[in-house]
Image (cartoon, rainbow, N blue to C red; front, side, top):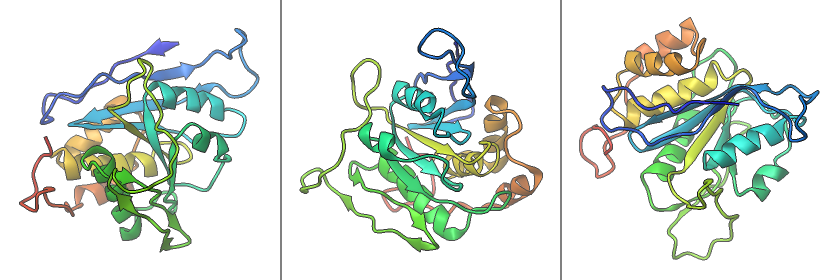
Length: 240
C-alpha cells in the first residue's frame, strides 16, 4: 500500500496538517487480492484548517475499503453528489454523517447545493456547533439543525483517528468517478475559505488528482464569485 502525505502549496495562507492517503491497489484482509475492485481512488486535499477526501463512488462490494480509508483519515462527514451506490448503515455505525447533495453530472452545482455544501464545511471546520445532516433531497432541503454542545442531541460518535484522538476532522466527498462534481465542490471550498483564486484552486486539485474538473466546470469556476464573508461578519478573507 503506497502512502502519500499531501499539503497545501506555499501560496496557501496556512500550512496543512499531515493527512494519510492510500492510492492504488489495496490488498484484501486475507492477504490475497480480492475479487472485488480494489483499485480505489482516494485523494486527500488540505488547506488552512480544512481537510477533504475526494473519492470515486463506493459500491456495496468495496465500501469496506473506503470505510477503512475514511477511518484512517478521521472522516466525520461524507457528501454524496451522485445517485446512491451503497447502503448507509455501515456509515451510521461508524459515526460518519451522510449528506446527500446530488446534482447532474458534468454541470455546475445549483445554488441549493452550494448553500448546503458551504454550510457543512463552515460548521465542520470553523464552528463549534454540532453538525446535523444537511442534505438536498428532491430539490428541497432536508431538516437540518445546528445545535451547541449543551443541547440534548442524540448522535453517533465521531470517527476516531488512528492515534485515538478526536479532532482534525475531514469531509469525504464523492461523485461517480471523483473527477467532476466532487472536486468542483472542494475547489469552491478553497476559494471561499482558504483565499485561493479559482485557477490556483483547480491547479492544486489537479496536481493531486489527475483528470479532475472538465473544461465546462473550469469555465464555471473561473467566473465563480465568492459568496461568503468572514465568520465575524467582516469582509471576505482567509480563515486562519
